[in-house]
Amino acid sequence: MRWNPKSKPNPEKVQAIQSALQVDEIIAKLLVQRGIETFEQAKTFFRPTLSDLHNPYLMKDMDKAVARIEKAIANNENILVFGDYDVDGTTAVSLVSSYLRSFYLNVATYIPDRYAEGYGISYMGIDYAEDNDISLIIALDCGIKSIDHVNYAKAKNIDFIICDHHRPGDILPDAVAVLDPKRDDCSYPYDELCGCGVGFKLIQALAENRNQTIDDLVGYLDLVATAIAADIVPINGENRVLAKFGLEVINSYPRPGIKALIQNVKKKVLTITDVVFIVAPRINAAGRIKHGNEAVALLTEYDLDQAEQFASEIEQHNSDRKELDKQITKEALLQIEENNEQNRFSTVVYQENWHKGVIGIVASRLVENYYRPTIVFTKSGEKLAASARSVKDFDVYNALEACAEHLEQFGGHMYAAGMTLLEENYENFKNAFEKVVQETIHPDLLTPEISYDAEIELSEINPKLMRLLKQFEPFGPENMTPLFLAKGLTDSGYAKTLGSDGEHLKAFVKQGNSESFGAIGFGLGNKLDLVTNKNKFDAIFSLEENEWKDTVTLQLQLRDINASNG
Image (cartoon, rainbow, N blue to C red; front, side):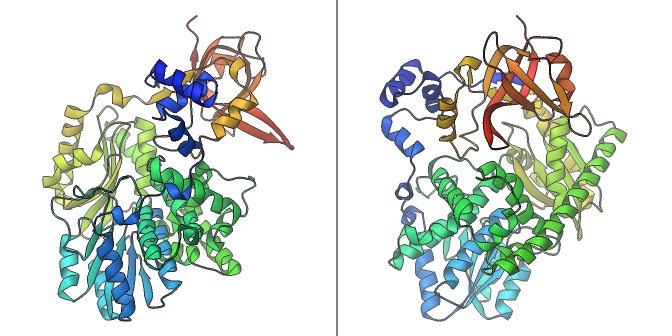
């Protein structure tokens, strides 16, 4: 890994915030790095409130969306809530449908089949609406590029409200309302909402129209926090408020579906990281292995016994997903080796029988292995479908735009995208993508980078520092867990590897005459030699609390270690 310090914060700003808050310099530096430079900004950061949420009517077309929904209710129309099959889509559908059903019964839900219909609004879904006398479709987490689909629906006298957060194309769909903070003509103050977040702004506007307050909507925030965690959107601004209060709901009074998913977790308090690794994969597994409808059924179920039954089925899907992604990753790595493609600038692989539901996960696994922009294709009907994943600071969406002539369709964002193409165009696309990546990627981006916030002495680590760092939560993009660099560390002599293959590292480290701290390094077992025999080493780590037999101690979670130069 390349070790890089994050940009040094302005010393005067650090001094100012340090004086204003009466905190240690290290905390002041971390705040300025996150753009928090005044007492008021710090107050909002450390003590967010629901009143910090923006007026939903600042979003372009929100008034039109609310008016059309109220008209549908007044006229007793049937409404279809349509969403993508991933976590963001299924949570959004669960959120909007359950809110509408709290006062109106003629509401159905629709999640497209990943295999029969693919991503986004589908003709099958529109036909379903027509067959069931549905005259309004609310599309969530998709639809911003569905020009033809919306026109198809319009010809059948079916209106659309689009709620999306992906980048729009040059032309917007001819819908009654298009809610997307990334629209060029939308002046909404925050444009990093996930799809479920846009759905929440819609129900917030509806609630205002019905003389409800934000307090009436808090119970829906467990869904929003789950989507924010899963979709890896920045956890700053409005997302930070939604995530923080959503986590409180998850930890205190989650809906039965989420309660059923987390009831076997032994931790007292779940963090956003726990949501990412425990809740989100299971919700995702329904759409990957079976059908996204199962996730919506779980998340909208009010009976705990029934929710537990749904959760048990989804747990099995998640186990199946793990086996599939392990096997396909193995086959993909073998394909790269057999084709002598280890030294390319990109990875593009294809096998017609790979399971479409896990190719995105496999792409991420391949990035971990070769660290370069990666696309995994499989057969989907008459075409090939793929998931792309990128490396830090390389825009894979722009690279796909440069290869658009070979693609049938594509969509996504900087770090993840999906696409389809005709099989006869596969090789041409593969060559074109490699050429674009080779010509546009900076060589440094092909080596993983770890950026640390500040250098620290172990003597500065104490419970007070940990208490303040915990108030920086929830962590995520734009507010990552603070990472520290400490130099000249030594192990107490008890360093060892853990895990069935010795893949993890356990040590007790000190710096000079400092107090000794436990340290755990997941995936760093191969660096045991660097810390034995009293060798001095440098480490990048985060701080965490380790609970063992009702005793809480501070522990270093090692992210990387190198031999000390000094």
